[in-house]
Image 1 (cartoon, rainbow, N blue to C red):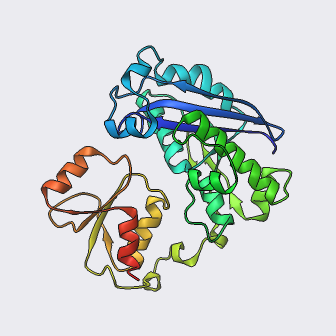
Image 2 (cartoon, rainbow, N blue to C red):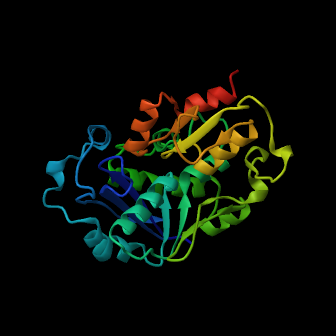
Image 3 (spheres, rainbow, N blue to C red):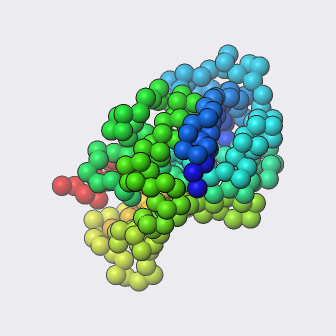
Length: 293
C-alpha cells in the first residue's frame, strides 16, 4: 500500500454538512502527484463569522461555486475510488462527508480510511498535542493551516514522514506491526480508524461491570456531550464520565449539570443550555475537572 489520497474539509457554519472547501492531495508510490482545492457552495448556504475567521472563505468566494453533490459526483468520488483515504482528525472529516452525503441523499462510498491524528497519538509520546500544526512543526512540514489544500498536503506529508522515520515501505506494514486498524465507510456500515483493542489504554477499555469505575470525582453529576472534540471521540468522553462516577444524558433539561461542548455543536442545544443555566465545559476544562492536579 504505497498510494493514497489525503482529504480535508472546511465548513461554512456550525452544521457539519456545510462543506465550503475540500483539499485533495494524491500520493502515488509515495510521491505527491497532485494537490488542489475545490470551493463548494455550502448547505445550508450561509457563513458564520467564526468559521470565516478560521479559514478565510466567505460568501463572495463561493458565489459561482458548485454545490456539494456536483463536486462529489464529478470529482471527489472519482478520485477516492480504490484508494486509501487519509485525514487528520478523521472523526471530523468523515463525519462531515457523511452529513453532506445525507443532505443530498447520496449513497455512501465504500472506502477504507486512516486518521493521522490518532495514528500519531498512538505512535508518539511526550508531544504537547497532536494538532496538525504542532506535528507539522515537529516534522518540518510547510503549513498554511485551515487552507484545505495545505492541510491535505500536510496530512499526506505527515504520513510519508512517519513511514520514513519508522522505516516502512508500505502503510499496511506499519499498521500491522503497530496493531492499528483502518476505519471503513460503506453504504451499510461504518467503523473508525483506531488502535486495536489490545493496544487501547485500560482507561478507555469498555467493561460491563462496576470495576469500570476508577474514581467518584463526578459522582452525582450529569452530562450531555455535543460537538467534535480535538483529542477524544465522544464515546471515549462518555466512558471517562462513567468511569469517574458521572452519568451521560441524551438531552438537555433543568436536571443537567454540564454541557460538554465541542466544535460545531448545534446552536439550538447551546441556546437551550444557556437558558436553563447549564454549565458549559470545554474539552480542556473537562480534563481538568477529572484531573484537578
